[in-house]
Length: 140
Image 1 (cartoon, rainbow, N blue to C red):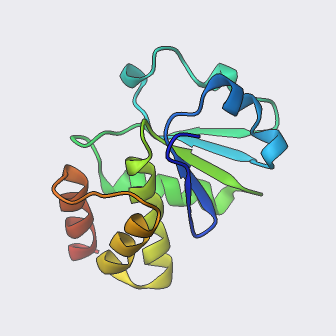
Image 2: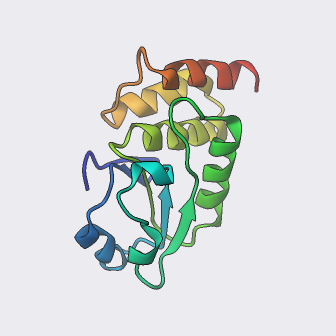
């Protein structure tokens, strides 16, 4: 998948192709979390997800991201019974919310989340996501 990386065992990536969606069960993936709003997708993704893969839709973008998106992502990760893919268009949003959830779990705050994002190969510096990350832990 485009820009595929892992954060704490969770696969973060950009938009999977139709073939990559069909291949999820072969990779052992049990849950797919889509962070893209409907307007970003050329056609609905849910009908393309194979049987046996739980589909979770948590749409947001840089202007609409809120604490609830992290909370819903964390809940999807906690409910998963196996490997999880969290995706957006290019992977940055996915890395952000997964890194925040991991940093909360580890108790290492914004610095820990930022480290995880960077280690996964993403950069949020100067984006609305960087401001969200700082504010998220400042109000936690």
